[in-house]
Length: 189
Image (tube, rainbow, N blue to C red; front, side):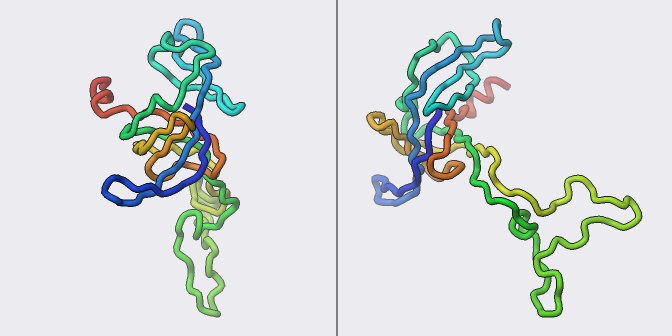
């Protein structure tokens, strides 16, 4: 299912404990295409929401029809879900922030407060090894947060409240999938 991150808030449980939840406006999503193994080579459905389209793998595509609406009521409180989206981009960052490198001495005589230092040996190999942790762009990649608990479902407003945080900023497109249970995963193995 597709949704838009609306923000975070706090709610109370029956015992009076407070905890943070993320509010996601999920659906209604419309099935725009059904793909089958016979025709395309894999089973999937394409969902549309807020002028965006995403493909989701399904085991039985015959259960879905083009034009069918999928609403937030497919989730129940207590379900475990996976939330995927783009992380917040942090721009170009140095070694200390990007990789949590330690800094140099902060005395006035030091000339290496936050610089990366030596990047390789001299004559042999005479180059910088691939994979060296160096300054560069940080964040902005696709992230999946697994096993988030659904706290509350509000079908009349198409809202889904999940425990904790989901990737990205407010207004970000989020893909929400039901997490496979451990029993189902053990049965497949």
